[in-house]
Image (cartoon, rainbow, N blue to C red):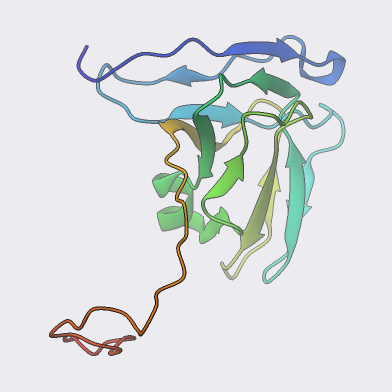
Length: 154
């Protein structure tokens, strides 16, 4: 395996018991799949244009200096138009609550989320904290300057 490894402790909450724990689906995958911890008898239905909070039944303890990013699953987005609304969602190292995923349905049909369905992926990443310093007399010039929102091409 390439890259660096970090140990992340987790707990499954009572409503998440019996569900698969987050797992990488391939040897080189960057993200672990998160699954829905909705009741078997009460799937969550997202109407077109609507969003909802999907519980995972998972609590994690990230080590200091790391974050977890919650990102969309590309297949769900491509096939159904369903994605993570606040992508990427950030889980800070000091957060100890349940991981919930905010999904939105940009598709044309209702999207049903059933218990155990893979709904998002979680990427563990190092955090770099910046020390901001007020610039005395302005910022250095660049060729791009203040151009944004398509200023460098299509």
